[in-house]
Length: 492
Image (cartoon, rainbow, N blue to C red):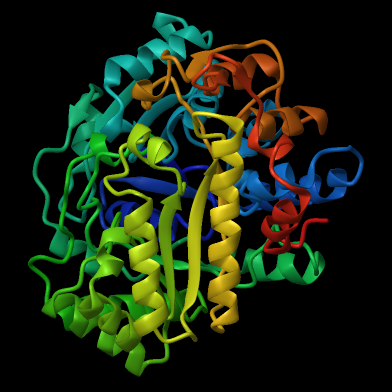
């Protein structure tokens, strides 16, 4: 059976591990004649070049440029405009396309274009796990796919490992849920047919020196557990996915060996352990010690409550080089609204612990979400004042401390609890808020159409407790705060 594997159209640095597992499964099945299509890699490059070349041609607030998550824009843009999707589809040589869907609604437009062009599509990946199959079909139908077109689509939900029989799933041609897994097999996946394309990021850095759209290194992203110990935040996908422990039945030495081999494969020393919330135990610590012994730069994502524990900070000091932590807001009302599971006092207690016990050569990368709801403009300003005060304190202690601003985005498939209430209402009129400001920027440089981004994310308007319109954060916070955010990205 001849099939084409089209890597999920997402950031080059972040999808290596998941696409490598699928690729290893396909390469080991003699019943499949697979062409591994590299076009999404080269289109990542073309999209980034396009953005950089057009960025200076329009007037746009600097924080929008920074908070558009410049390192992730290429993936989103490719997915939301035929300008780049058709370039990719033109390179496909087989009638059946296996497509890994990684970022929800952004995957619908390329799948729509594949179906319109007459391809049979096997849709898998994380999107199919947290979005119901019927919802996916309804969304595609709403975008213009006829029900007859959708007969050429099968949706495969679940997790792929080396034991998954993809040949039989494709042969039967019906929607399927993968119900059994042997996750120990994923640590045998050390080859990658896309290997040579992972050097693209470094070449782009050289070509566009000084532009922080581009990282100077591939991140080897590794997941031990694909879930968060809290898992209730209303803006997050974790509440919708199955919890899996990928290392439970695997010796730590084998896990570490896989990480070291794939670091060598991708020519990187940077490893991001992207569990929803990192948890230390004896098995994990053995892996971390081996990585440390091999001079691997290791980053983790962790929740605020864990940083209130000195023992956790001691382990971070021993093994970790950079800590990502989702603060999101310093306002108690807002933290309760998005169900973060902690309050401002917990944030300050965690950072008091960091000040006392954490080595200041560990980089801190806290997240803030722009355009969350607030009771008033004063509360909004106070939130950013608290953020800047904490940044100043940590930098005075010698820490490299830089916020990552992210947009609030409300998609039609998840995050329903965030909208249609007193503080956030659906609204397609007026000034855009949240990620729609990034979409407006994309529209200005010719990469997306309004009818596409109105569908991809729900336009909304915020209101304060008195019912007054609350404009976007970027038009209200002091310019000095904006400069602090933008300095991380080199955006002027």
